[in-house]
Length: 437
Image (spheres, rainbow, N blue to C red):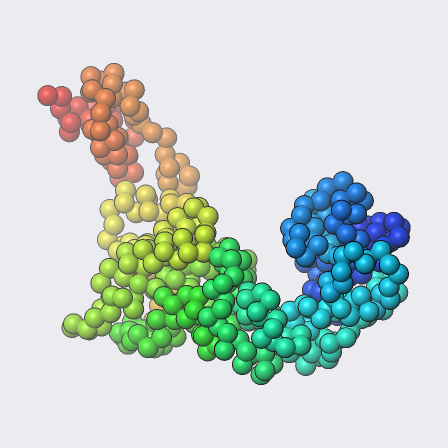
């Protein structure tokens, strides 16, 4: 199977064979200069979208206003865009490739993303000191940062994301513009904001990134529920690390050491204590009554705001709802414990609790107990074959109705407790405990 780079080369070559100019541009050039394999390839060309559609059998228009299409080849997607900054009607006229590239990159977001290259000659086109900013590990807007951010408010968040992914700092003038325009970030589409925040959470450096989101005002604009964690004290006997915000940042730091965490786990790390600011009270000690339930409601509100999928909302809400259940694990009846351990989200819940412990009191005793209980259960015990069905109850003379669920659940409890092992024993048990009227 061909690689993404193989397909990107074929697409660029096909454009050139058809008489068009075509160059690498953006992140693929940046990543190759940093010695990393690009995760995507972007091509800039003088071909119009109509010409691209005629050259490639499978294309998807993704930015008609900007002349951008996705070319699909061998399961890979390569973004191909018509040069920016030049009237489409004049594209057929001869032009200096360097001047076309210069005009194009003048409208891109950051200097490190405004580099172009000719893969055949290795010529680098750098009109905005992007190579120097790579060496300086600097995120700097192309030209006037306010103008760049007004063109696309999501760039306010993207600046932080690139800083987090690459371990760079944001150039002072660019950062000042982010602070001044932070509230404009909400003007970007909810889905795009969600994807940027997820990328930050899953980056190698989520903790400094969220500190920067907080310090620039972006966190307050986008996730005021999370910004509210700052200054919310916690009982020192359980949380010697400090307030809820400090605890959450520590969890993000530990999350960055987890290989390949799921987006749902990352979101749950950020939001597991989101209910604490609203439930803070001081009694015999600092308490957060029902903060898990309140947190679920806030998660659902955030999910609706940023249009998460239903499955993602349900999974993150379940993790937030259940993250303190571990405290009751040793006291659970066997059937209750098994039902809890067999939940689809339990492996993520277990990891969330581990990170929670490491970022607070540091004790992993309960986590180890639950892990060992989970690992010791073979499939036939964690979800054994049902001893009875609704049809069995009907055959025993029980009329269909809501009572079926109660009876079958009680039978499974007894089965999980080890009290029932055969259908015959289950039928006798039902007759004894649920006599017919």
